Image 1 (spheres, rainbow, N blue to C red):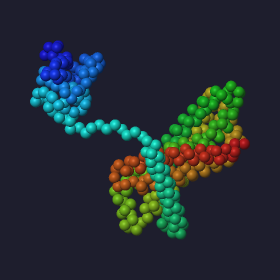
Image 2 (tube, rainbow, N blue to C red):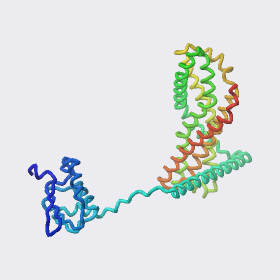
Image 3 (cartoon, rainbow, N blue to C red):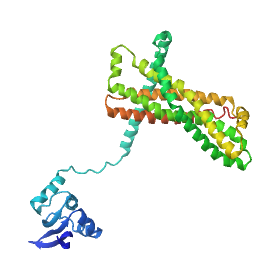
Image 4 (tube, rainbow, N blue to C red):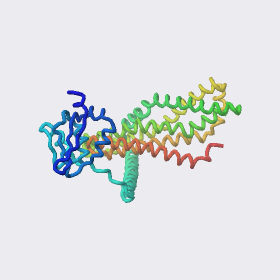
Length: 374
């Protein structure tokens, strides 16, 4: 094949008062890309008239890219007058069988309102479902008080171990790392005013009130919340929950209640654990970079951080633990018996749990802004 045969081109002739366009050369991806943008622009200026005659008999090479290039020039349809060789038919036959590409619908105000209404409806449905699940768990707890043998001790202890003991190493690392970063960020500002010892009260208040419960809750949402939602959802897929009902056993008492109770018990303890390692990280930075000895921390920490802050952090841990357990269990029960719904509900459990933790922590921060800061 010569160089002229490799280059795509065309000739325009007048045949019986009609325009005839005869293509020649190679019309494939390599040849068209080498021809450049000027070639594409000039060929597009030809247009596609209904009376035109097209001839592909002199085309030496054709592939899917060249066929698509011509097909778009023709307006995604066959010209009325087309002469081609038999081996060229399959390229265009495949393009003709493709469904037409529809432009994406324009977003109208009505459609936006419909979507907003659907989102609000789903939010209200999920809120009501979580409250109903909470009511059922309260009934199960009262039943256990009247029948102590029915209390799922093993399930609760297993949940405490999975959510609590198995999270200790991760939370210690996160707490110490955040303590180091926070102390580094504050050290430069405090040293300018000669108030190095103020690092004790700043870091202590930050961890006891906000960072300890917040970090613990976020880690548990991603770790334990997703695990609980996926586990309960898998029981829906394998019909284990239906089997429990068939035997007259309450799924909420045997499956949901241990998870919620375990998280409620483990989370405040994990908050204390995270606070401790956050203080360790801050003590290390303050002693090495600021000259604040660890003995000064021991002496001044009780006076720098009022006792009410300990109770605030502990209470947040209880609230966040119960909330994470409720949300993850609800979306696990909501999963349909198929893998697609299982993944969707697990994702929703994590997203909704994270959003609720952030929102509730912000609201509590505003409501308790005048408590424990004196």
